[in-house]
Image (cartoon, rainbow, N blue to C red; front, top):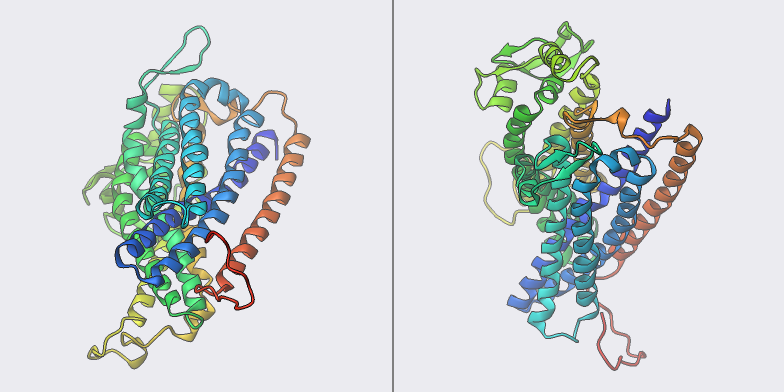
Length: 470
């Protein structure tokens, strides 16, 4: 692997690892705020204990996300300084605002919430965790707006003297059609990731405390609703993607020839080239519907787009890695659907009802309780949405190749000059080692917190604290 490939691998490792924690943090902040408001309204102790439990999970996950996010930003200067120099006037303001939101707004109000139990007025205290939840959404939106510039560059002009991209309208950047479509899609995926974690913990610990049953069902509903939002918004995002990056949609199906009523392959075996795979399961017209909204719509093929890009941008290959785009697109959808099915089955099996559904076998009747096989495979609940999110981002970024910013800056032009293979390998090994240790620490902390009883056990020999503390 040359310097370019190693630098791309390093960026992929850091980005994918960082994004394992970001969606979970987004969901946990909203869940903690929801439980807190439910306790404030109903005064039920169950919601109070669930609020504090999800808050602990949020703090642990938020801390790891912040650490890995810092490395993510430093990478632009370490490995991609040429791109940072070109893109800095556009990306700089978004990173600055996101940093102020994440480090000042979210972290400050999260600390106020954590240390404010029995110190702040109840309504004001509840407002702090709501601010944290809103801050995470704003932070995510701004970062997605920066990424959307790379998918569909808007609100910029090239400085003729420096050749750098200069931001012309922050409002136009924030209202890029790609970010408007990608934000609900990404938030749906975040709901699935956080919901999967809560559902897994709830199922695992239901026998220890009845409140964990509520946690499991809330997690399952969150994952199911998040999956529905992801599917609906993904349909719209696919049409926007086809309009601004037609090569990406063609690569998702390995469609080399422009076609009307183009089919979509659910599964294929064979070489992904100009010839169709020797075996495939196709849905007629589905690719046209995903790209154009019509089952009889026309989808441009890879060969025609390659010829058009050569005429527009000059000689070179503008075709991304077809097998990666083809399979990550399907794995994203397939794993996401499997996660939704797991959540739906848990909700069905724990539905408290005496009603029997005719013709259904006994083990499929509602209210039968969580079956043993589901408890054995409970770790799949958080793993499936995490995998779907990862496949989605791999598709989004690799199917844009060879562009960093589509149409104006290529990947090969963005690597830091003078960077050596030894430097990239050493930093990649260091990141991998540190991230591995962070993963172990996060996992052990989550397991430790999950094993603790939700209801605190008071000891008669302990002196009460002067001020009740969380």
